[in-house]
Length: 136
Image 1 (cartoon, rainbow, N blue to C red):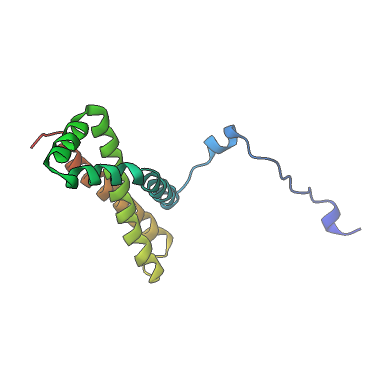
Image 2 (cartoon, rainbow, N blue to C red; image 1 turned 180 degrees about the horizontal axis):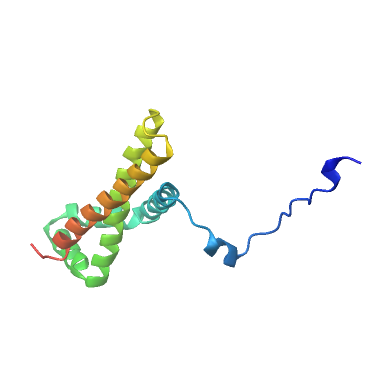
């Protein structure tokens, strides 16, 4: 008999929800998933953004009505989520364009650039969020 008969066969099983919670993604994987989620968020909220834009440019009364809608605290939270989605998608997109040029493909550089993307997008979201909520 050969030696391969004595080796245990690999077990392939379905992945459950508990197994998914145990996996630890690297920072580049987290940024990749957030890039996809932010793109989906922007795409699904496109009708809302188009209607708000159309309301704001239709007339002065439309702009005032849009200002009232955008002044609602819940709507401000929705707009803050959209701001984050746009900023994260933009920053991660620049990262992926640089990766397409074969710059920063090693593990250390990829982790560093992913951390920078996450930090910059969150910092910009904080700045725009403070402006949105009227801090200055």
